[in-house]
Image (cartoon, rainbow, N blue to C red):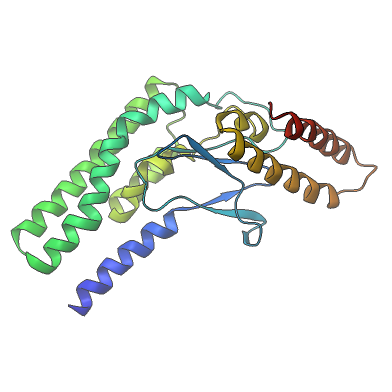
Length: 238
């Protein structure tokens, strides 16, 4: 029983580690919620390789998540419009929810109560579902002109380490950047959430300004961007 418990805990730990997303300064993480969309800029205290650590909600792997452009980045050829990205991801929500149930409900139950054929059947279903999600993601990406290169490494990881497949929808979503920056992404949020996100973005810009000389062109651009946010905070409009 100790071995089974350790296996379940290992699978959960791998999944939680896969929920960690690294963000550049001023880059936003957009994550769907039960009601609307949330926007995060990562932790103010924890960084890895100079990037902020953001954590996807471990309980909702069936909701999409995307990353915005970095500060002052322009949309490139491979940047994806938000509406196109959402359209490509939505059909996989049910499969992602099914994978979560298979990995963290059905398989642990069978491991403890029915370690024979029921466990084997649940394991085969989990692998089949992962393969279906991979092929469906590839099809949806190609149909919507989204780069499919990241899916090669992601798909190998999902099949080699099955707990990673639970997060396939969001892992695929953060593998590319939307064609909008954090400031434009604010429009997806309701009033109060928008104001909080604007304050977080303004704080990040202030920190970035402290890292460059006032005579630097980058400092001027950061100051201008911050001035654009301040009147918006007063008027409540984007």
